[in-house]
Amino acid sequence: MTQGDTIDNVGKRLPYIESDAYLDNLLVRVGQVAIDRQHHSRATKRWSRMLVSTAALVLLLLGIGFTVMNNSSSPQHVAACEADGPVDEFLNSLTDEEVAQLTYYEIEEIPEY
Image 1 (cartoon, rainbow, N blue to C red):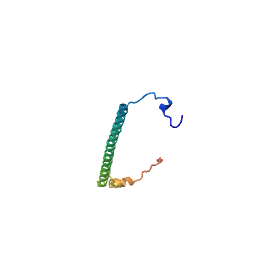
Image 2 (cartoon, one colour):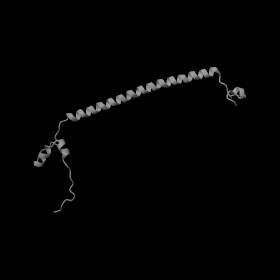
Image 3 (cartoon, one colour):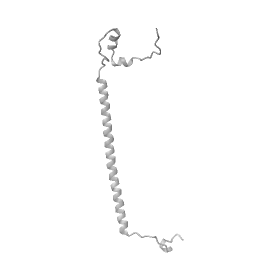
Image 4 (cartoon, rainbow, N blue to C red):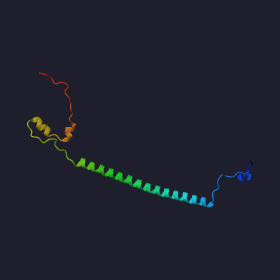
């Protein structure tokens, strides 16, 4: 087969032949699908941006709300029981912040007398 030969010259034919109407219809359908996908893609991107921005706004408002709540609460006394002795008076005078600073320790053994 030389460079100038075509399929018709060789004597071979394709097993099928498309009509011009079929090809035109195919091109119109493919073009419409591409347009629909592009429109759908834009709508999806718009919806995603709106969803992400709404979520970010909600998180920002929650963060501001928690910050305001934590800053506005004044130190309160942990317990307001009647003071029976000096230890009770001391414990009742502690604020939440001071109680949080207390260290807890464990006695390993209680001596027997």
